[in-house]
Length: 632
Ligand code: PG9
Image: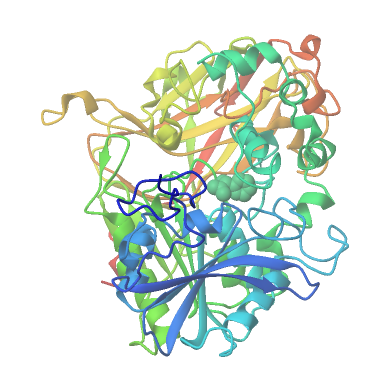
């Protein structure tokens, strides 16, 4: 009889033989056109941050583009598992790959592969951050490490930063004390002021839409899911539960420190003021050439890029401070930009931004490319469907612009116009049990409509008994608006608190022979919400005196639009926009997060019109021909 051999000649497995998984498996990378390495970059406090460096194979003297993210650096640096750097990195990086850049993604401290503790949009060192590290120091230390030839011999020692939303927030932090090697920056829809108009509140109205983010993002260090919401219709889900605080309690968000901080700071107090990055930039303006990007229909961060650009401009930063606003939803800038909802644009506007604006600027400062002549503001003209390139912006504003804002008055029987209207008033009952939805129901935040909700045809709301619609006559001439409208309502309510939503709408001609379903479309070109308790100051909430006329004045998102002949200018007013925003109980309570079901009450809201205190929207109306302030 033969002894069993541990080395069978036919290759079949034998008892006691090693398994099919070798100690080490290294697929050849010879065909790969890049190298990818993961390094733990040390910060000044000893914390190491997980950093993915993707470099073209054989690169020398190459510039670096850095993104600091809470969204998984490893995942951000891998669109596809491919030997090609172009396919490996995200679509928005194609401009950099084609131009020989080194691309770096880093996890912010405490998330995914990075050490340390995670603090949501960590405030800068100071009263709100008693440690000796923040995103300013982490960006500084990272850049110092990257430009050290011993660490990254392929680099030319120059760094640009880019990123959208939270990643834009980290770019702006780096500008507060830029490392000398940071030569150019592109904050895209950055989170700048979480209370005034970016992710958490708009003028004090809390954004229920973002609450799930907290669960997935701060419930776990790595990937996580928000707690389940229940039924399909988020309108019902949120309505049945009551306040945002009760929703948080039932879903477990009340265990999360950032949620607890939010509940402790419902007003614009030192907590929010102390982390408003536009104010910090104004106090400490950066000299780094910066291109600010903002979507004109950004459903998440609609506020901060333009206010930051304005803050720097006010400090004399002109030749190196550029604003770009395109016809985009949130972060669409990193994807394709041919269309939004039913609207088709003049080509891939997002690619145009990346290829014709970002790349030349980055090439200039990171590669000694030709000097770029970017205009001060490049803003898509959403009425004429093309880019406008302005040497100055805005064209009309309250003070200091070539043109003043012009009042557009609400009138009788649903009319509106630039002439002062006869005195009168219109009332509606705002019922928290039946809030006005932000989209036709059922509303589900995961159904794919969230990103386009701001371009939704507003006729679904027009005609509701709790929505007032005021229309101009049919325009016989084109009317251009270029700047930020200001809503200015004079209203009384039977309640002691209340919200005001104002929409500026372009209503299309009733008949459209080419695309019949677009006939009569109501496109909101600007809309926002204001919580009435803040009418006397955003940090000083107070009960509204019932049945007394009060003024509610607030800036609306920036527009650059031409209303065409045959269209109408329309304004809508309502008192809820749900469930994007939580409902106002309409009875004054100290903290709406903690409102009880019994606090919610119907209120009759009356909008005053005509006379000296007639409700109006101040529109940035300017002549249509602006060629004198445009570059081609
Ligand atoms: N808008 C998202 C966000 C930023 C900052 C805080 C919370 C959420 C984002 O897209 O990153």
